[in-house]
Amino acid sequence: MEEGGAESSRGAAHEKDKEKKPKVVVIMGPTGSGKSKLAIDLASHFPIEVINADSMQVYNGLDVLTNKVPPHHQNGVPHHLLGTVSPNVEFTAKDFRDSAVPLINDILSRNCLPVIVGGTNYYIQALVSPFLFDDAVEDMDEIFLGDHPEVGQQQSELAFEVDNSRYSYDDLKVIDPIAANRIHPNDHRKINQYLNMYAQHGVLPSKHFQEMAAKNWGRVDNFRYNCFFLCVDASLPVLDRFVDQRVDSMIDAGLLDEVYDIFTHNADYTRGFRQAIGVREFESFLSFYITEASDEANHLIDTSMSLKPVDLAADKILKENMRVISDSFIDTQPKAVLKEAIEKVKLNTRRLVRRQKRRINRLDTMFGWNIHSLDATESILCKSDATWAAEVVGPAAELIRSFLNQEVALVTNLDTLNSSEINMIQRDLWTRYTCEACGDKILRGAHEWEQHKQGRVHRKRISRLKKGRKYFPEQRSS
Image (cartoon, rainbow, N blue to C red; front, side, top):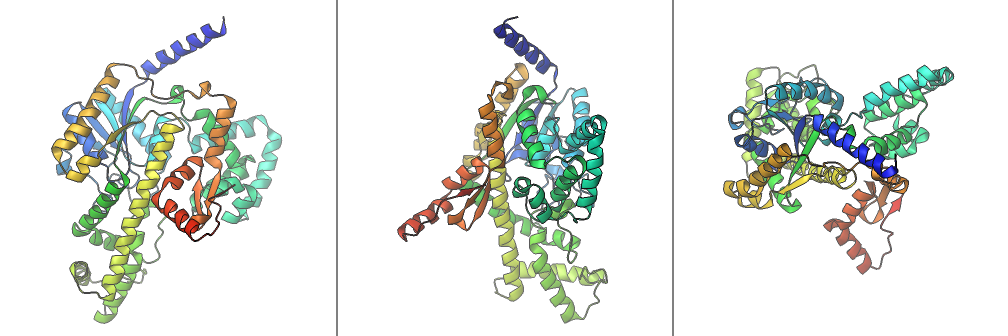
């Protein structure tokens, strides 16, 4: 068979295989853009059920802080994985995938459309793609232990060596500096995962993930579902103002009571819903406030180091006094500490918005997910339901209707890329850039670096340095 005919046959087989895959709609976007609202509004156009893909909203509790859609605003639309997970467990991407797949099957069996909604992109990636860290480890177990017994001996030696290294970030830097550059030094979970991979298989995590990224990402024939991706977005200045206002509204709605109820001195903020923005930021305030209030009132201190009074009546008084401090116009020390905590929540939420935007843009531009963007800027600015319906809900409904009625090529097949393009993708994913002009700020990947260079803060700093005739190389790459 000629090459052109073979390509045609593969293309036809690919389209036929795609037709067999269940159709799923995925609504992505930065926090505050209106993802959940859009999903609920789409229920007037399609028989849908929502699966929450927000890594903090899956947990039971902190309803105000995590901005869960309350039942009376869900308009009867079934919501799954919303507030159903115990806050004391770690709900990983694998857990999400394993929970969401049977839910999607159930929704499809009811002739309804599954709509995945959330800003936790690695949840979505784990669901739609068969590639997952846990799966890779299982596959490598078969490869290394089944086919190469001599490597098993090496693995045992490596495991012994790494186990005695206490899984420190410095050890990872020595073994695999490229992988170390991709994670935060305090991200102990990933440090353990990477070192375990090296210990068990003798494979550098960076090499493994580079190969798997080029091989699996963006391949429509590898996707578990026939996916249609929507992104609700808005301009950064508008989102910044909106999330700042939303934090203030959350304070008014009882956010302080929520974080007070779960506060424990020196808590672990790397597991469960304590990872949510708005928990750790209030630690200094609550420690200061509760200690001061307890000392003044001579209350008993809980021996569990929670610092909170044992007396429930005293607990209630402390909560009421927190609201007094929050509403007060007098600049006391507790008020100053509280204001600082609130500003940290706003700042970290704005940073989250930027990270989410970068990641979505990367999925779209680098891996060809063909994410259809809907601009909610005007509707957020004018707070108009009519504008929202006309500029977001209406276009979204038309796009989804077209998707349901005809086949759309959603994802670029990496088979069409040549080796140099794949190498470029690999290098872009793993190159670390350091912006000296911005205080040695670390950017990961060429895309993040280009986004940073276009930012207002970076351009202002470069301009000031040039005016002051100070030379700074804009970046170093490694």
